[in-house]
Length: 354
Ligand SMILES: [Zn+2]
Image (cartoon, rainbow, N blue to C red; front, side, top):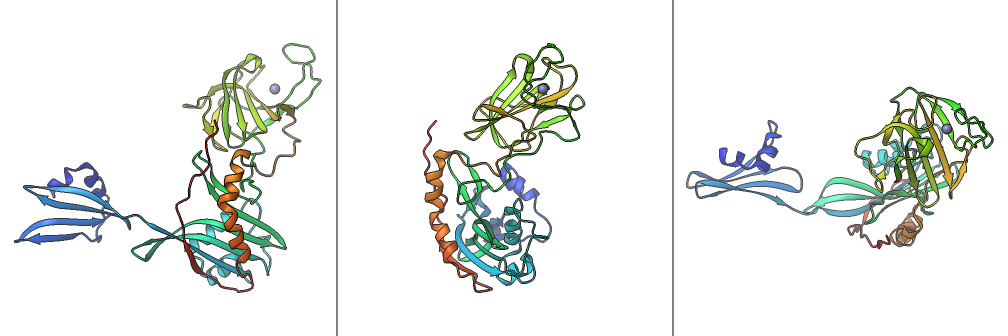
């Protein structure tokens, strides 16, 4: 055992062992010759005698991913009818999360609503060992059809989109910080409090205590980070092709951020301060569409962020057959779960154009 624990990888795995987990061993001529411990469904730690010591290897088998599908009609609840259709609990939960921005599954759900789901199942040696992610889904809610497709490419896009290529999550938070009050609105003819002359106020000011966290309102890329004239410590995020947001007068930026880096919605950008031309601590927040300033408080926010145009052809290519699969599923039957095909690994066919 000491020889095995000398191997750091083996030691870290074995330290996680709990009482009752099986260890397999083999003896030769009364002496221990090999020990095997199954770490998970796909990895086995094997120690084989070699001279006086043991040689430790981690043997892995590749999971086999298959696709399954199920459909059903709501008669009681998504959960009960999903189970009746043969859907694993986790897949039902994922389905509810997926459409959670669009559908209130407690209040909006109606008798006769229909669901169709294509999802992954993970197999080892022909035996199902786990459920994978949802690949495609459709929900007909009071006659309204919402669909979701999983899409991943080599540029780091990884998420769920409608067939029009809109991300399912809401694209923008309503404000970049909480617990605040608006101290100055968007006003193209405002008298500047410090400069004392008419200067358009092309954003919204949120008065907040020094150090209040500021969050990215949407997924995006850092287009600027540094000191920018009257804005002091400022950060600009580019969101897809058309939208950008600016955060000004920051006390400081969140650690580790740099220009060109991707940020996620809700990610910490920095802290409220009064750098630049500011009378007191506040966040100056701007919203631009196609380079033109708009009022962040009244702008009709895009329901969801469209994916970048350059990915759309690849997205349609990857999801085209899934739309057909959803359409072809018999939605008259209450229960229809079956394995339909062995899924290929998501192939990243998009080319980089940067
Ligand atoms: Zn301002």
